[in-house]
Each structure stands twice: as C-alpha cells, then as structure tokens.
Length: 345
Image (tube, rainbow, N blue to C red; front, side, top):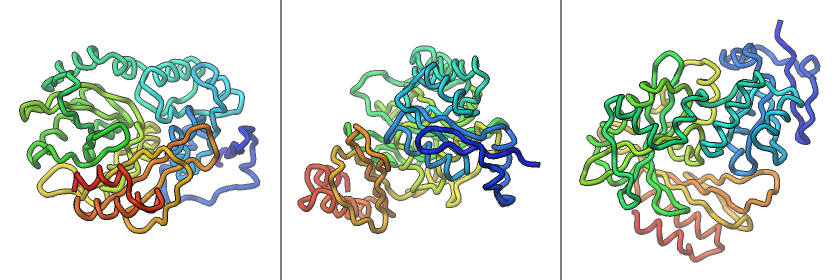
C-alpha cells in the first residue's frame, strides 16, 4: 500500500490529501522509488530564478515542494520540518550555503538533494579540492583570472557510473555559450575523461560542475561547484537530459541515464550550439519560435532577471535565432546582446 502523498500548497501550508488524489501506478519506476524513500515533500532554498528549475523538476517527478519564504540555513531546515517536508533542495545557492544546509539536514534527519556534506565542504575550499584532484591524477590549471576557463557539468550515481555533458564558457557577466569554441574535438574528449575521473575519485553522487583553465593549449583543473549553477539549460538542449530532474533521481539512488541523442559533448563533430543570456528586464516580450526558451519565475519577486536560451544545429543558426529573439525582447534593434552574439557566429 502506498504512503499518502503530501501536497504543499502555494502559500507554504502542507496538508495530506493523498487519499483524495491517489495516483495511478506510474510507468516510470523512479517515481515510486522516490516516494518509497519517504520524499513526500521537498523544501526549496532560494527564490525566483534560483529556485525555478528545482521546482520544475519536483513537479515533473510528482514531488510536492514548498518555497523558502525568505528563510535560509537552519531557519529553512526548521521550516521544512514544520511543514512536513522530507528533503531539502538547495536550488542554485552557493557552495557555502549548501554546506550549511547539508549539515542542518543531517542533524534534523532530512534528506539533502546534493553531494554529501564532507564533499561540499571540500568544494568550499579551492585548495582542498585541488589537492584531492591532484591525488586523483588530474593536472592542475592556472588560478589566474586571465586564463580562459571552461565549465563541465557531471552526473554520477551511487553505482560508480558518471557522465560528462557539454562544456560551456562564460563570455561575460550575462552571456554563456556551449560548447566552447576554444576546444578541439580531441581536447573535448580529454576534458570529459578528466571530469569523469575526478568526479568518481571524490565519490560524487548527483550533479557537480568542474571548472578547467586552458592556458598554452593545456587543460588543468581549477575548481568545482555542487548542484545547479543556472547554466544547466545549455547542456539540456544539446543532450536532451534534464539535469535538474537527473540530480534528484541520482541522489535518491536511481541509476544514471544516458542522453537520448547520444554522447554529444565528447567525440568527433559538434553537438550544435547553445547560448544563454541573462537579461535584466522583466518588461520584454518574446514570440518564441524554434530554438528559443525563456526562463522566468511565475511569481513576481524583487529579482529582475530572466534567462534567454537559444540553440541551433550550428553557430550560424544559433546566431540568427539569437538576434531575432533579442530584437523581439527589446522591441527591435537587437541591442548590445545581439551584437555580442553576432561576433560569436
């Protein structure tokens, strides 16, 4: 007999309505696995964009979730207990905040949707993480801000399997592109091997992003961040894997799933191109169309940022879609963002 499913309403008040809304057996076995593990409700850290993808992933997995209501740290854990949540999702919070949440969850007996507490603590200290990676045999890169960096998300399960997705490069405070145009196919394959080796050596379960510098044509590890970072849309549209959903599945003990369109990020050829813009206005309008996605919170918040994601089969197609979308958003003219995109065609 299934446990009652506890829903968390939008105002943050939990109530048991599983008997009234009994689910039919799901064709996806991991949904039952999540519930059997006691995950009836998930407390999300952060708000606005920082909690958007985590909340969407919970909804897709039919897990009720509750907003943070401005709380963080121990106060967030106390709110989760008060509302009957069984797990805490850190959203896109920084490593230090995730470490505090993981520690609080361990004390309160709640599941934490992220790497284990000791690993997150290591990620808070670049020197400690670099030492661990040196012991795993990874080359270390330059910490100089002048050295170009690429960032590669990695998924890993509790059975010792890991998958490196598609790397991205930050080309400004509000613009990122995947894959990086600096890497050759051979370097991309090598980067994936390094990332997988490093993640497995640390015993990662779930999602983390490893960062590497590229100096004098040489890749070297420089840092690591746990969980969601806000750039997951880039590998999602190029591989077909929803990283926010996969993170929850893997932490819950499920097996790693491969991209439905193949291992696009590492090997010969190009996996297409994706571009992400962080826009500062909520007043724009977007007509949509192929290869265009806008991530914006449903509930009004003090935050004024939205994420515009564009992708295509190659850089030229992505660039055309980018200029069209930015022109629609800005009411014509394309603006500085369109010019920046044109330079990267």
